[in-house]
Length: 117
Image (cartoon, rainbow, N blue to C red; front, side, top):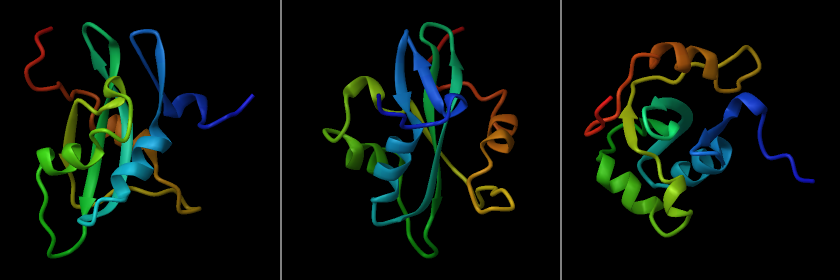
């Protein structure tokens, strides 16, 4: 048995599990990314899908397509985040971990583009 994530930090999409930590680590490898977080967001067909939340390094630029293109081929296609949200800050707990509860609350009404409910 290999535990890769907290149960709240894995995303169940269409009955399959996706590790948010693996996606975060991969996205953080992009040269313009300072920090990345992944949360599950409601999807009408798949129950939930990954949303990649990115804080870029100062004076760096990247687009959604840049980030997803960097990740393409390095993970299973069905693991690929459905969208990228760029933010100025990512909240942390007192111990320095990403505060995903705050992110889930911030993005609770988020809807993926091109998805009809």
